Length: 395
Ligand SMILES: Cc1cc2nc3c(=O)[nH]c(=O)nc-3n(C[C@H](O)[C@H](O)[C@H](O)COP(=O)(O)OP(=O)(O)OC[C@H]3O[C@@H](n4cnc5c(N)ncnc54)[C@H](O)[C@@H]3O)c2cc1C
Image (cartoon, rainbow, N blue to C red; front, side):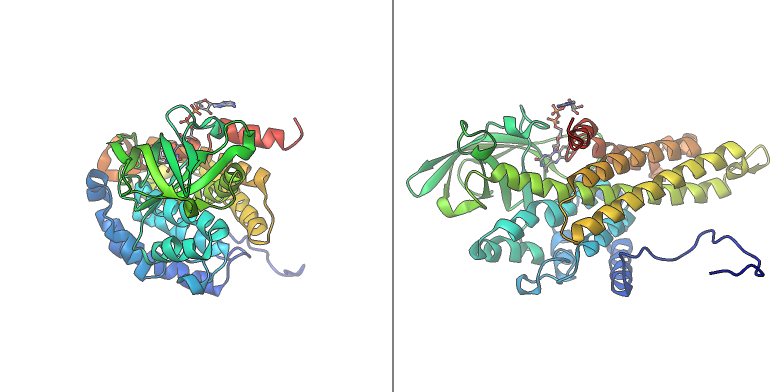
């Protein structure tokens, strides 16, 4: 604290870390960041064409990055939720939204329900190899006729003796082509409303599981996105994940972690685009000076930095609630909505500041915009986030 007789100097660019993080998180950040920059980032352009290879999962499993907050007894690192934030943030250094998304689906979307709701046998069979990177997971909620309206899904699982028979289809499934299994949302009792849903763990090599189409996308090209069909797929009764009839509530819980980690990725992606663009604006000259010295451009950076910081604080404070046992659906929805919006706005402004270069592939800024655009749609659209937030006030 300064006293009256000292000269007060503003702490611009203060390096003080956020209170949720510790020295241990810093060390983790350093090791993930070094790995991403050395082993992943150099391949970003190539993987835009080919999608990233499965070997990335095995390598990240070897390094312990796929189970940062899972218990050590399952091969995890036993860390807290903030370790997952660190991973999501450092993955932005890969310069590949598609790669970051493929990994996040595995670590923060498909495997958390197995950890929380799975039986010991399911954890040994699916969670342990996922943490090692030996099995790749995917998550199937969306269908051709039902995305935002999860309760409108049509995929049915019907009990038949000791088995269930599954029929239906899922679309836009990340990792759907490479996955060894899928956490599948089905309806087991169409007359039971929200109590008629059940999750299943379905191996993708079972007869009747058809990987129909590799879908072409605007961005996230390094990830694979599948249209899947399930035709009379027979699974044993012990493939049920969690409680029969409670799948809707289970998947709504899963979506909270998915949205929060997505929000963290958005902030990190926006920061990365900002940093690159700042560098550019300090070097690129027009009318005899660096473009960053024009007031208009300077203010664009000020706007972007303020947006990024506001989203970051919202993500960190919401993560703090989450880590401390709250189920903060309103704040997670706000964080997801705000972070996704600002990431797209920042990416767009960064293209503008780059001028023609921003439109060219070699600068990588147009890719950030294409990749980030998904975040206003995936894991719950802006409109759905607004609705969740609005309803939380009793409206
Ligand atoms: C690249 C990519 C990867 C994805 N990965 C996965 C995955 O791994 N697993 C998975 O299950 N899904 C995945 N998704 C699906 C994604 O979560 C859905 O696309 C998203 O939830 C929106 O659903 P929809 O596409 O059916 O849009 P729709 O629900 O048809 O919505 C269309 C429009 O209507 C609006 N709308 C709908 N309902 C309302 C309402 N009540 N009030 C106001 N507006 C409304 C929406 O906001 C949107 O603007 C992925 C999608 C993409 C594009």
